Length: 524
Image (cartoon, rainbow, N blue to C red; front, side):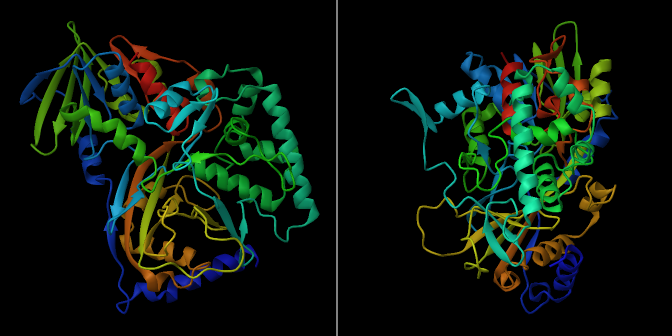
């Protein structure tokens, strides 16, 4: 099927979906993130001179309860520092790595896996050892197989059937396969020439990396002669999956980093191909953040919107809005770890340094949507590869879905939750004002988009879906646009007086390893 015909079929399906009328109503709505609360925080920062209703004290204040903030809290605990408080806007810590439930079934509200970390991510390795996910056996590290993604791991709905893996291979011409092999060899050569590393602060900013950082990935692909439409679709999918934006918006460094920092790119028939091992759970990375938050007890203050951070002669003042009590609380501390997105940090820090303002101005963030669909019984399947953890539909705007029950040890077919991901950053598909569209479109419009897309491989989905909960992220992740790596540098610690800054934004893109490492280092 040609792409234009494919998308036309999807549009037609949206007009005739049985799940969209009164005969088979699907419950649901928006959940997971309180968008209005975030906007109220933005508006409240303009009134910086307001006096607090309550003044409290702590040795350290952590502003922001995402992965970086939770990592900082853990590092303080390990150092024997218990007199700290962590302030989080939402009702649950974890940021983009939170989990939830639909109809009693655990599912992710954001990030849903963690690749087995390499040697550079030693802080993350230590965490996994602490949580019992890995141990040394006969001198070698061994991961608990219960938490590794079960097989089959991934499949692609392509040309009317399912195939193993996400790289289109069935029925493609030899020219396509030849470009796959040439791209694989080019990635291997770049891995040898330049040091790619996760976290990025462990990689020196070599001339090779900076040259790749300076131009768009699409431009680099054109220059190198990689023009095959199937290869370009796959690389675009990878960019939207990791960064929320397409190859024309992210840098060549970012596009190649996806492969070069891990196990490379493997063309079909590569006998040495090694599929990345990933850790995953029904609730996604919420499994990790829940365990990071659990020891904090009363030190974790959810529903607290940070409005102002200011250095004083005696230390630091942090003003926060206690959303539940509707009061302004001032925390006085020796120091503050600012584990907020860079654009928020620049807004709430009094007299922000020039480099912080410049960093905020130079970063764009991709909006994102995650929809969790409860289905009352297993879906009928098309021919080809067996149902997998990650299931992607070729040529669509979404990133496919993961099955919350894929990790279950009980193979009995039963109800499950499918988590569908839709990046809304700039790409070949989306317009320039997708953030406003994300927030203004009604829930039913996103429901219909999801049903239209996933009905291509699963025509029975509208009849079997009972509920769809949609989580919206207006600023889900930083986009590593050309020049971002050069502007941010690769500093291990980012400080200004009594303030230490920690967030994945300082790496130019958002993954667990980057956020966790920067949070840990900011607290040590």
